[in-house]
Length: 145
Image (cartoon, rainbow, N blue to C red; front, side, top):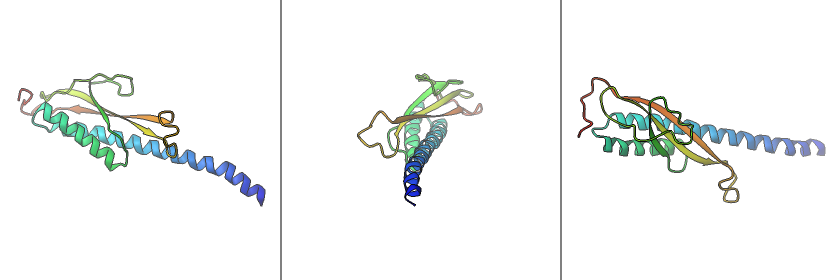
């Protein structure tokens, strides 16, 4: 009986912690993907590019908060076909010109559960999400407003 309890603790506790870490990272990955989608949709429906950028930042923050992911997201507007997982996907490609296409990249850093302040920065995981925005070709051109 003692061997069973000893092996259970030695094997089960790391196994449970591994699953908690995997679920935490998966939740964050789903959150940034949703945040990128919502940011892209918020930008595409805005009346001006500055309003769209503000709306995109707010939509991304709300989507992450909805999924329980803490922290401020980094949002980049990269050219179409950019890889959001790279170090610098680019920025400044957002436009409301009809037919335009660009990628919204959302990045955030999440800490693994139970690491606390002792291992801060060492156990952080960076998660990226991206969404390709295509501005409707028949939309009125409001990029100059």
